[in-house]
Length: 527
Image 1 (cartoon, rainbow, N blue to C red):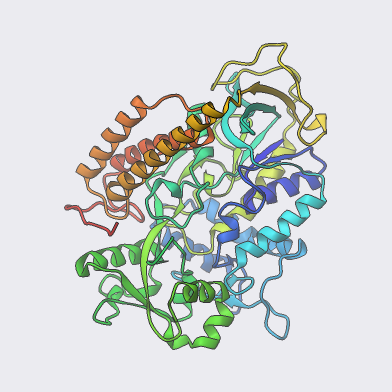
Image 2: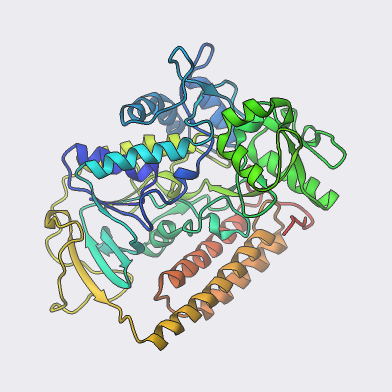
C-alpha cells in the first residue's frame, strides 16, 4: 500500500499498517516534519474528566458543525479518541502533565469542558510529529521524501497507484491501495495559517480521477492570527485561558454577535472580527494581559517568543489579530473506514470529508480525527484481499512510458513495495534552467492572483455576485493556462481547479450555514 502525506493521519496509517505486517511506502511532498501537523498549537480533544463524557464531546462537535456533522462519524471520533491518545503516548508523545502525573487538560472555544491534552504548552503538533517520525524511521515503513503527487493511477475504475514528480522525474508507483493524507488547501487564500505546501494536491488528484468530493465551500478561518508580519496563529487556547477580544475603544465586541463571546464557534468569532476590523479600518486586539507574563510564557512558550520577536509584549499590551484561512472541512468523501468512492482509494485527515466537522470544525478535533481515521483506514486496507498489481496499469493523467523505458531500483530498495517506472524530464542547459526560473516566477504571480481573488470573493463574507464573478474568472484562467510540467505549475493548476470547485460549491449552497456565510452586500476584509 501507498500512503501519501506525513502528518498525523498519514503517519498513523503507515505505522498501523506496517506493524500489522503490510508492505507500506510513505510518500511525502517535502521532508518528514513539513506540513500542518507540526504547526498545530492547540491540542487533542478526547480525555474526559469529572462531569465530561464522549456524549458531551459529541454534542459540542455537532453544535459547532451547525447541525451538518454526520452523527455516526462523530460517534466514532469520540468513542475511539481515548484509545488513539493512549497510543500516541505509547509511541512517545510527551503530553503535558501535572506534578502528580495526571494529564493537564485545557479548554477551547465551543467546548463545554476542559478535555484537550497538549504538549510543550503550545507545541502539541510538533511533539506528535517528532514522536511519530521517529517511530516511522525506526520501523519498516519505506519513506520517499520530496515526491510531489501529480495524479492517481486509475485502471478499470480502480486506483492502482500514484504518479509522482521527484527530482524532475515523473515516477509511477503502483500498489493495491492508496491512502491520501495530503492535508488541506489553505494556500487558496491570500492570508492563511497553512504552510506553502498546502495546495490541495490530494483533492485535486481525486477530482481528476473522478472521486466524489463534498463540502469544499466550508473553509474554516481561524479568528486570531497575528496581524503583523507573516501569518502566525495565536491559539484558540489563549482565549480558552481567558484572553478577550477588544475593538479600538477597548470594548468586548463579540458579545454583540453571540452570548458566548470569545468562546463562540470559530466561524462566528471570525466574522465578528472581520466586520469590526472593516468598521474601524484596522485590526482588532487580543488582550491576554490578565494572564500575566509568567503564565503566558509557561503555557504558550512559542507564541510568547514569536510575539516578542515581532516587537510585542503581550503580557503588558493587547496584540493586533486578524482571521486567516485555516482548515478545510470538506474534501474527498469517505465512509467510516476512510474509503473513497473509487475502489482502492482511501483518504484520511484534512484531505478527507469524513462528516465529522460539518459546516465548522470544533477546535482540537483535527489531530484527533487524523489519529482515529488514520488507524481505521489502515485496518480497512489490511482487510482487503486484492491481488498484487503485477502488470502495468494505465494512467488517467498521461501516457505510459515505452516498454523499454529504463526501470530504476525502487527508492527504498525493496521491490515488494511497489512497481516503478520513470519518465525522464530533461534537466536542460543553463539557459533552459533560467527559463524555468522565469516561468516559476510567473506561476508565483498567478498563485497570488488566485489567492487574492478567493480572499476577496470566496472568503469569510460572500455575495452571490462575488461568487459568480470569481467562478467566471477562474474558469477563464484555467482555460488559458498551459499544461503543467514543474512542481510550481502543478500546484498552481491544483489551486485553480480547487478554486473553481470551491466557488461552484459555494454558489450551490444558497443558505448561510457555519463557515459558508452569504451577505447582501460585499464587506471588505483587510488586504
